Amino acid sequence: MEYVDGEGTPAARAGIEAHLAACPTCQAVAAGQRTLSRDLAGWRITPAPGSLKAPNTAAAVVRPWWRPTPYVMAGLSVAAVILIIASYQARRTTPRSVNAASRTMNESIVQPAKVTANGGLPVVEQVAPVPEGQNKASHGPAVIRTATLQIIAKDFSQVRSAVELILDSTGGFADQLGLSADPGSARVLRGTLRVPGTRLTDVLARLRALGQVAQDQQNAQDVADQLVDLDARLRNARATEQRLTDLLKNRTGKLTDVLEVEQELTRVRLDIERLDAEKTNMNRRVAYATIDLTISEERKAGLDPGPLPLLTQLRIAAADGLQTVVDTTVGIALFTLRAGPSLLLWAMAGVTIWTIYKRVNRGRAARSTASE
Amino acid sequence: MVTDEDLIAHVKDGSRGAFETLFERYRDPIWRFFRRRTPDAARAEELAQDTFVAVLDGAKRYDARGTFRSYLFGIAYRVLMADRRKAAFRATTPMETEPADPNAADPDAAIWVRHALETLDEDDREILMLREYEQLSYQEIADVRQTPLNTVRSQLFRARVALKAALMPQPVRTSHGR
Image (cartoon, rainbow over all chains, first blue to last red; front, side):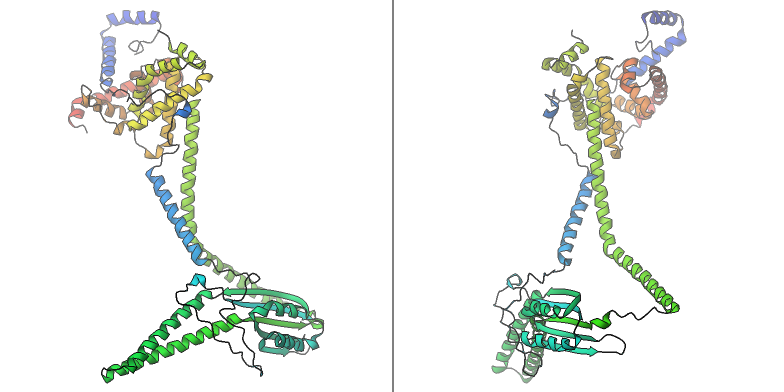
């Protein structure tokens, strides 16, 4: 075989030639190998294309660093769709976080309420109508504010009067205010206060001065969109009412038609009343912030009721443990249901990107290998 | 005639003309090397280009331990292997989709040979092709594949026996070919 391939030293080749001359079997083998080579030569390749030119430098070869395959393109498309959906969902689900300190009450929507002399519910003045064509974006913020305040007071006897004084001076009122003084326990003043939103900061500051603050929390909810929607629905309902009223004034049809119009008018007026009430309620909540106030008496606040019986402690611990298990299970289930599909899609996108990254690296490594 | 080794030595010294001479000398052999092993002509051209770029880049580090041919085809072989690894998911045997040369004297013969080569073990096939098509010597094949010389001998012998067996039923294959 080596002889036919032209291999071997001259001496070895001379020896093989001498042997071949006398050996028909080896002649047949050599002929067979030559035939095989001729058969293989039947597979011819066209000459190199003219575009294959000598490169100037490595940098002269301009070629895309990455050749996207259908699989990669599909992966990228899926990733793009996931990103679009995720961003859209994020925009939809992001709560309107309102910084209570940075927002101011929208005076153009709701005027501060007047407190009646007898301490009854304040009357909210008429809301300024939203001009026609005004969209939600141009509607200022309307924030419902709530606060929770727990205070431990030194001089409890003066607390209630101090709270009432604060309410009077700021135009607020107490939705409810009660004092509990069980024997052997601290006296506690609990109440729900309503104060003008613009005075909330002032009221909270004055309440904090009554003692040591144990809890201080504020929340805010922007309801500007709901107010704009309510305004629009009210305008539409009133326009419908006006049209129906005009129809009744100029009635020319049958009695049944007139009755139908009156029924429709009644329904529309009920809608208007309901929307009005809803709006008034929302405006009141916007106009008046709510404070959940708890003031405890200091000297009783720190009393230790003593250790619980062992059985009770075990029962409480068992109940707490069980509750923790339930809460954890529910939490895991909720998280899985909420985030599971998204995580799965992100994982797919991540795997796709990782695969691309690996292939790119492998391609670079291969080129560097080639260059070595 | 200036030898390949002299030319690459000039290239190492920065001679552009020497490189172009080498390129013209091996343009077609390298093209055929890739074209026979790559289903896509454009890809084959890119790989051939990559090979010459690698030669140009590596000329400064060239060490004349073997022939330039073995050096050049060694680079081409590594470029080919790297490309196959990169495109492993395509998993197509190069010869499956390569068209027969329409200008060949007998296109059927080319198809028949390709079919027979496909039946060989990949290593055996590569060694046989390096010998038959690239006309490399046993030592050059050993250098390209970085295997012992005796391994080349035994694999080449095995490949020829297997190919001969695969080519035996020629009339049947050509009459029922693709």
